[in-house]
Image (cartoon, rainbow, N blue to C red; front, side, top):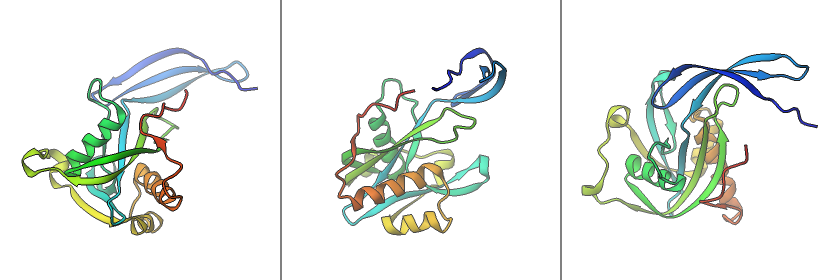
Length: 199
């Protein structure tokens, strides 16, 4: 039998553009009520873009909370009203790597930090890549202005996970999932519009 945790009160501590911070009062087994601080996040998408030569797109971007550059997948927030998740991932691929994709499948869904946040990222696999014409490309600003974009063989990217050069969680999960999908001939992928996991 599974205990039904219930939120019996909630206090908002911070409300920003990307996330809110709340303290929830939650019932516990045995009858106690405990406070739990939670980051309520808008959600995100990422994309493993795999070209015909078996290379994936990696971006190197500065991340202020950890004070360093990280190798990551093209990714971003779900912050355009009415935009589907696959469309958001393709928008991020276009904005960050100047690429479009003719085929998109779902790779993995991940809670990034479930101990303190409800953020979920859905990572897609994009194939049949083509370059976006120069006059249609997105103008990058802020941290994206010095973003480095590289094409790396998928096996080398997986090696970068295991030797510690790639530490971004969605990149780790997405690259390992993409390598497994490739090794299985891409036959077990879910469609891009598959429903989100149940709550």
